Amino acid sequence: EPEVTQTPSHQVTQMGQEVILRCVPISNHLYFYWYRQILGQKVEFLVSFYNNEISEKSEIFDDQFSVERPDGSNFTLKIRSTKLEDSAMYFCASADRGPLHFGNGTRLTVT
Amino acid sequence: AQSVTQLGSHVSVSEGALVLLRCNYSSSVPPYLFWYVQYPNQGLQLLLKYTSAATLVKGINGFEAEFKKSETSFHLTKPSAHMSDAAEYFCAVSDRGNTPLVFGKGTRLSVIA
Image (cartoon, rainbow over all chains, first blue to last red; front, side):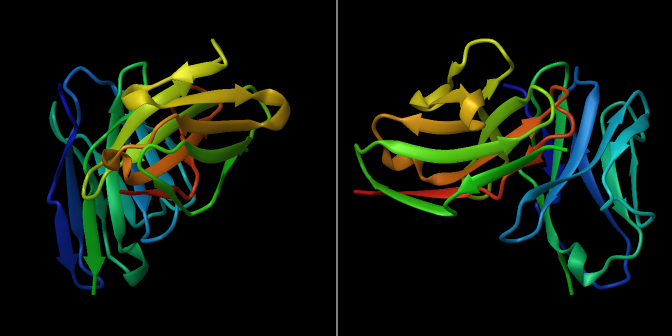
C-alpha cells in the first residue's frame, strides 16, 4: 500500500537555526498538510496546500513557517529561525478526495 | 468552530474485555468524524470515519463507532480487546470533509494480559 514518507525521523537543531522537514506524499494525491504534536498535547493543524498554494493555515503557521512543493514529489516545511517551543512531532499528510494519510512524523528537538 | 473532547487520557482494559473510548464533539454544521490510531513510533492510521451515511460505522481491526447526534458523541468500541490494540487513539472532526481536521488530545489504551 502506498504511504507517506517523512525524513528525517529525528532532527536536532539549535535555537535560531533553520530546519527543513521533508515529506513525500502519496503519488496521486493532490492535497497536502502539515500537523504538529507537542509532547503530551493535541495534534494541531498547521497548513494545507493544494494546487501549488496554501489553501488554509492556522494561527500557529506564522511568518517563521513556509511550505513548498519544489518538484513533483516532495513537500517541505521550513522553519526559518527555530525556537524552543517548536520542539514537537511534525506530521505530513496527503489526500485525494478521501481521508488523510499520515506519515510517521519527524521529531524536531530544538536545544 | 469545531472541537473534540476525549474523556480519559488513559484507559486500561484486560485482554478480552470491552474497549470503550469516548469522544464528544462540537460543531456548528453536520460534522465528519474520524478515529485515528497511533502505534509507537508510527504515524496516524485511519481506523474509521463517519460522513453522514450510516450512524454505526465499522472500521479496521474490529473497531466500530456510533454517531449519536443527540449526545454529540462518537464513541469508539471493540467487543474484545487484544494486546495488539495497545496504542494512542485520536478522535477528530471536520466540517468540510478532511480539512482541517481538529483532533482531540488522544487516549492511550493499555491492554493487560
